[in-house]
Image 1 (cartoon, rainbow, N blue to C red):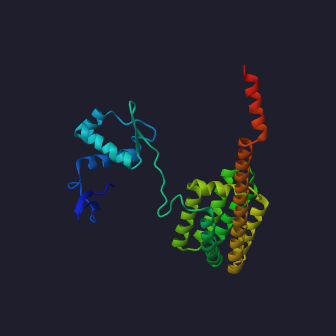
Image 2: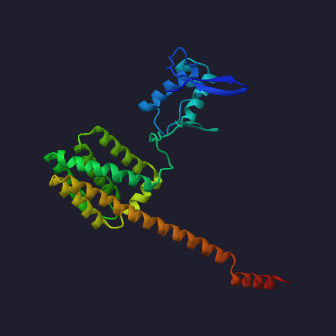
Image 3: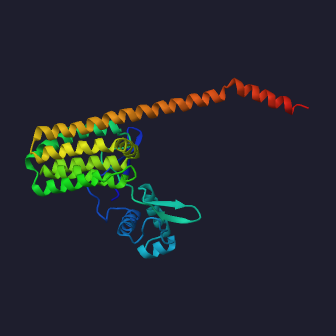
Length: 283
């Protein structure tokens, strides 16, 4: 769980290197062993998110170590983002933050959609030849759920949408396709900038969105690979266009707000009003 990091000196520079071989418990520093044990208790729910850890003295007795060792273990857990130290209050367990391997907050909605165009387009084409009758029935069920959608039913809509695309990925019988599409959905749902943009676009035209998914379903039901690929790409093409429009609209609004603030700040009428106030206030 915690890597051994040791200082090294090379040509006058001090740096660190990480051992390339797994560390055994015997080679770990004591505080790391304690931190690992505390992390296991956190993951098991014995110390749930939001709860306060036992007092330092109590933890020292439980793990049969000194209080300084407990303090070092807490620092290690704090560095991993699993606990927060509140002065005068105690140490509190934090919610585990989901990380998306290889992707960070710099991923844009446009990059995500471009990737889905290629991957899910080919996924649909492959699924058209392999999808089972049971999977088609599940796909129709997800489509029916989307048909009941409304602007207020965002959570239901998102779940049905993901279910629809997940069934198609599973119908490819290719685990790499399935995993990649799952990860793309994880990115969409866990990165705020992409989730908000996607929801704004999806709620613009629910009937058009349903028609696009129906076209995908029809192509798969007809076992038409070319039509399935085209329908999936058309779906994301419309989404990409809507995202451009939404982004442009937000940019225009931002400029308008800035101009309005400038007008207010440097208004001639404002200067006259200020002079009037000063004149009235003069003795």
